[in-house]
Amino acid sequence: MDDPADRTVVVNPDGRVIGSANLYVADASIMPRLPAANTNIPTIRIAEKIGDFLRKST
Image 1: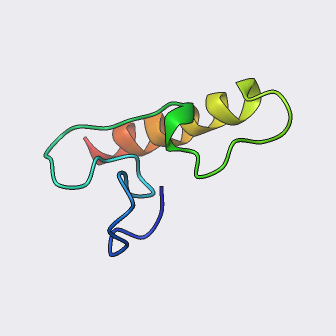
Image 2: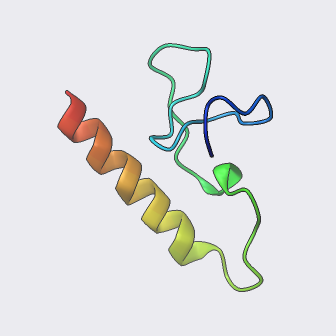
């Protein structure tokens, strides 16, 4: 999850998969680096943020 101009990035900051239409990812796989602690709370926050974006965009 980063700048879409970077060729190694798969999703943009809104969770949309680059190069496809209407495909979003909202889980721990979009973290550029996994935290050293439990990933539960960061994953929940990612899902909430992308969910909020999707609700506002429709």
